[in-house]
Image (tube, rainbow, N blue to C red):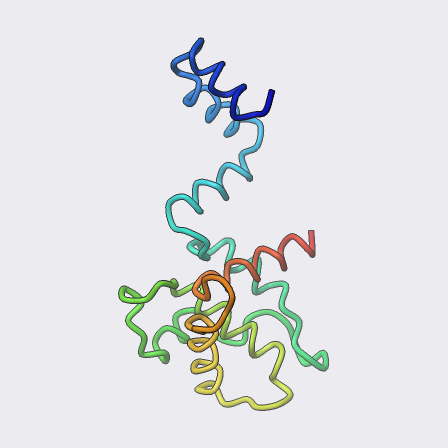
Amino acid sequence: MDIKNKYLELKKEKPNLDYEMVQVFIKDMPEEANVLFDKMLYGCHIVDEDMYNKAVSLLHWVDNKGSGAKWTVTDIVRLSDIDFDNKDYYEYDYAYVVNMLYSDYCNVFIEPSYYLKMAKNYLEDNDYMGKPDERAYKNAKKRINYFK
């Protein structure tokens, strides 16, 4: 019997099965539950400072010139002139991409405005295969999982 049919059978016997399953999930796998709930609430986006800080702390600048975030979220948002209320990505998504791009290209140019424009294009790329506004989250999660 596949998992869907097992669920349907148990649901007949236990009307509160959904609630019980969620409680077990939270108790036994709190980190995974938190990730799933964030995805359900916000989609695939960097929405909290902890995830953002963890992801940027793992950035290593090209040519070993440094590591971590070059600019703060506050400074990036202030300089961006983006109305994040009308975008499909969040401030942390954008700030992560700005710093990620800097870590990869700081040996090419250092002008902050280039990184601000590149990050916007990265998160709004119309020919990206997938949802471009989710790229920051997926990249950050891969980085965090890789360095575990």
